[in-house]
Amino acid sequence: MTAILFLALTAPQAQAWTHTGWVWDRVEFPLPWYLSDHVTDQLPEDYQVQVLDDSINAWQRDAPCSQLSTVYMGVREGHWKTGASRSDAMNTMYYDDPALQNSDSAIGVTYTQPSSEFAFSLRDPNDPDVTNNYFYAYDSDIVFSQGYDFYTSQEVEDGACSGSNGFAIEAIATHEFGHLWGLGHTCEEIDVQNNECEDAAFYSATMFWQGTPCSNEPNSLDTQDIEAITSLYGPYATFDVGEGVDRFGGVPLEVCFELETKGVEEGSGELAVEWNFGDGTTSNEESPCHTYTEKGQFTVFITVTGTNAECGEYEYAFREPAYVLACEVPAPAEGFDGMFTYEQVEGTTYQMVNQADLSVYGCIDQVQWDVFQGGELVQSVSAWSPKIDFGAEGDFEVVLNLGGPGGVAAEKLEISVSESSGGCSSVPAMAGLLGALAGLGAAARRRRR
Ligand SMILES: [Zn+2]
Image (cartoon, rainbow, N blue to C red; front, side, top):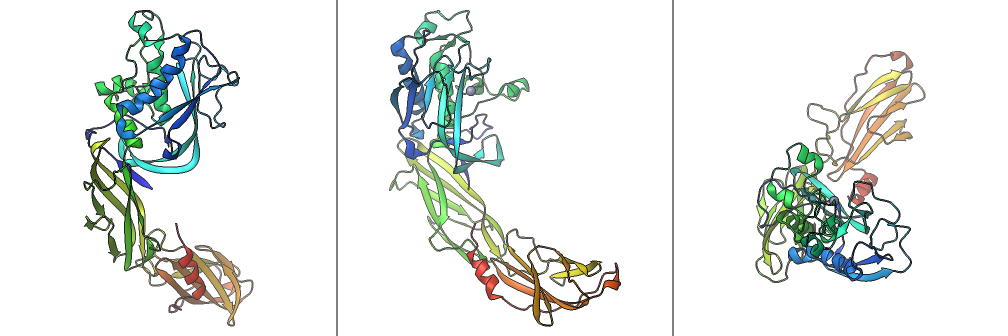
């Protein structure tokens, strides 16, 4: 599945924010998080939970269209020295890097374990030709390093940090929680070195790769951060086909689509959708049916515009590449008048040369070669262009059976196998189509992707 999402609040210029490729499933909200059992001597005790709670929730406060929510579950009694674990499914925050997991240069590190459960795809914000797959996050821990001094925002403001290599914990925590939510960096070090981090807004983003020592920008998000989180958690629409509707089949193929929206208020009356069926036709119906009359693999595309309370006006698009497959019955490729030919390799071994039309990917998914002698099946091979050893000289019939969503076809050639015919290609005799074979038809109907 592939989705493109761009909100109306997003300027149509190149964007530098990135995602990590994981996202929390909304069923987990409010997202629970814990603190490890350790009191750092760098920060006031009552501030240690508060600053994390403020920082994780800064994302919802400044990007309400994302509709995020969290819940602090308390201290994990006795849990500290073993450090972050990506397999305990408890999102835990650690001060003073107890297990020395972080590299020396890192101020803080977010350790996230994605699951293998596919969530959705989004268009890459920095390359419209690329779509990225997202998987649901399973566990995410944040570890603040030992090697840096952390200050409260008030201390930074009072000048306690000045001249040191310390940081306001709030700014660092808000950045790390951005990673926990699924955001990558706005510009990496290499982008800056290559002068590819061009916009001033990229440098002021919370998700800019580098923190500024003693910077007192507590946890307010920048436009880049808000776009990044909203594109990940804001409203979007997908679609599917109606129950019992096939989107793979022979032409003419009628496909009935159903719009599915998430994060879009019911009955707002403001939702508008445009469908692009991929074959040059469009529709403004909410859940249209469309008949494909030509063979091909078709990318289906919707653009939805609407409004809701949290987001105001929004516009987004969702795209499924190769969603519809309309096929014709298997036939020879252009320029060939037979489905296959053959040539002798050596002795009684012959190379079959499949010439079927593969111009539409997926329209042939069943291939079987049956070899008959005197009306009796002597061997079957299911490869595209196999070498067949007939085992003995004599007259054989070879039948190529091909099946796919468009139907089934078969073609027969008679081959006189002779060990002495050495090296020289035989000229095949054309045989007519044998028509649909019941077994292949059943196989083709079972096929779904
Ligand atoms: Zn980072």
